[in-house]
Length: 345
Ligand code: NCD
Ligand code: ZN
Image: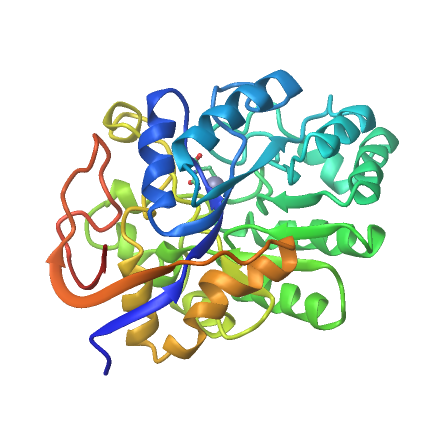
């Protein structure tokens, strides 16, 4: 077993860097080891990044936070008011895509796309999606139907992404943070058949090998609560198998919350993992997947999002260390746990 390794800089294609001063803290955390991050558009609730003015202001902050070695690729929030003109303006401004949040599916998703529109797309929604396809923008999806039973939300979204893939054959679609064997199966099937669809998998879902038992089976771990929730051990096994396949790449969905909104009567979903990339190395080593690490963290997303490779490496040493209980006011997903791998300068 190696006790030191280097990888090319990572690409984390799903990160929440929040707003205000947090952007600088969280942007710098990812920039320490990523050449590219895809920034989610759900800060500043309730509207999120849904106008060119908000996009420009937010992008300026993200760029300053990430510095010269990490590019923050920007997304905007798809809403019922997103017009083809806005799509074209966003494309001209270099936006990477519009993120589809079903209205109410997750933290700060309000004002997203109503569930009824997903099941039966009105023509104005189709026109917006056509414009995205024409402009070659990416459609990252939060793949849960908010009105279903909580563990069936991803299941009921499968027909939505399946139909989108068939109806918009050239639109690049990413099903974000998948958690079920069925989603793995369907995305892999479509990607193998040549559809422009991929899925991201998070570090925390790959970590929780006992599925839901790892976040509420033996006491409740609020810092392991996220949307979509980790489900059954069989689902975890499917995610572990998926990392060998070209259709799947890293999107950490790193999503910290301050204590006031996390530990309260109705706590927010979201896990903070970007601060501990060593947890993914640990998972890959434990399950005999190290040969697939670089493809998963650094290469596949680059091909799909058409990103230029940049020089630079990330270094990891096998050195037992305790994940801090708190960093900059946030609690890491593995707070207080001992990890065998750590990133080193
Ligand atoms: C994310 C957040 O907190 O912004 N939460 C989460 O549980 N994943 C939103 C999201 O991506 O679903
Ligand atoms: Zn997210």
